[in-house]
Amino acid sequence: MDKQEELVRTAFQLFYSRGIHAVGVNLVLAESGIAKKTLYHHFPSKEHLIGATIQYRDRNYRAWLASRLEQVSAGKAAILELFNALDDWFHDRVPEIDHFNGCFFINACAEFGDRDNAIHQACAGHKADVTALIRQHVDELSLSEELTNELTNLIVLLKEGAISMAHVRGNRNAAMEAKDILENILRDRVGDV
Amino acid sequence: MDKQEELVRTAFQLFYSRGIHAVGVNLVLAESGIAKKTLYHHFPSKEHLIGATIQYRDRNYRAWLASRLEQVSAGKAAILELFNALDDWFHDRVPEIDHFNGCFFINACAEFGDRDNAIHQACAGHKADVTALIRQHVDELSLSEELTNELTNLIVLLKEGAISMAHVRGNRNAAMEAKDILENILRDRVGDV
DNA sequence: TCTCCAGTAGACAGATTGGTCTACTCAGGG
DNA sequence: CCCTGAGTAGACCAATCTGTCTACTGGAGA
Image (tube, rainbow over all chains, first blue to last red; front, side, top):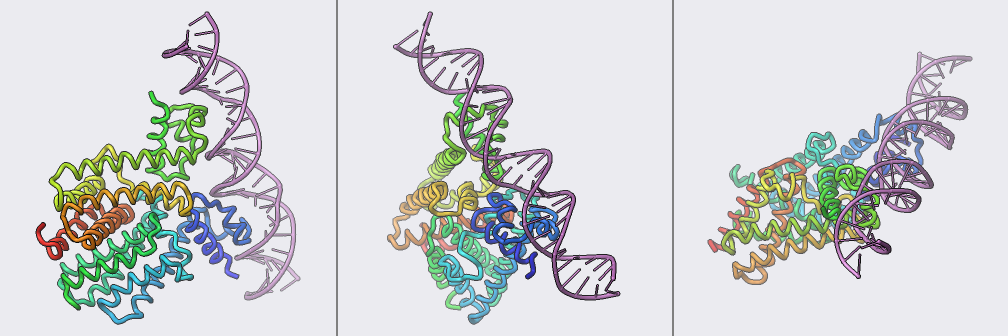
């Protein structure tokens, strides 16, 4: 019904699975069955359509992740649940965030490397927001500010590293490996919180 | 002189800075001043040229990294030196591996997401080789096989995470942050090796 | 000396790109 | 009843894409 939303959803799926520059607007139109005039009625250019797909993914992905972290008790369980969620994503057990093909935002930055680019900045914003979400859960551990920062940083690095390894090397178990490592570190450094 | 090598070098620089699909062969030719016939004399298609740039980067990057790790005494120092090397890369202090624009192999996989694709597989191979290089240096610590595996895994995840954060968020200090984290972990878990 | 090969410039082909435009339909509200 | 806005199909535009081709040059080895 809502053609604008339909365009964004179709465009996202194509961009995510094949790359942004590799997908032309004609393909998006053919796939969605929507007229070209309608696309350019809603979006002044392909670049704006790309921007809308970034926002769309940002909304969906963060909503999914936040809900996953809320389903368990706060603190350590929530932090470890992050990696369970990643594991489900890597194994394509989460249909609502599409077949795993790496991180859409990292992929977009690969194609729009210039940091001044609006798309690149939107991706940076997404990563900052996800980091803030993670920090919220680390805060529950009531550690010193310094330790909270360090632990947040560690979790983010492990998460990004796992996504990269899962995508490039096809190591679907990267999330569980990262989780095991994190559990060992938490046991030694933070105690059984 | 060697036109084939010149083509690969020019193509790599353009692909790395602007993305692969965003750069046409005509631009590579204009930039290098080489005739189109010569390109198609050496490479049957653009895809083969891309493959050559992957090999070129793999060679240069691994040679650079290996030499950096050999410049310090083996063991813990070499492991930490990895992050000093990354820091230099992020801050554009290593002209021979070009202006930092993320990891070329991760970027390439963003554009060639299909795991069956030859380019994707070459990138996976590169990551496997870099992991093997890191494991060699972890071996010097003479830990148990289990701990060696876990530590190698941790270092790789921190490294990949740092590259991702340095690129997407523009956090040039990601390598030093990862190094600090690793040092703390090493102190607690492995002792002052 | 002759032949071969890597190289040149650049026209050309056919497909595809992002984007514009005309002419039309149809539903809802003033 | 008529106007507006969202929608349709698809022709069209200039530019660009990968890849082919002709006609030519110049140097090195047999």
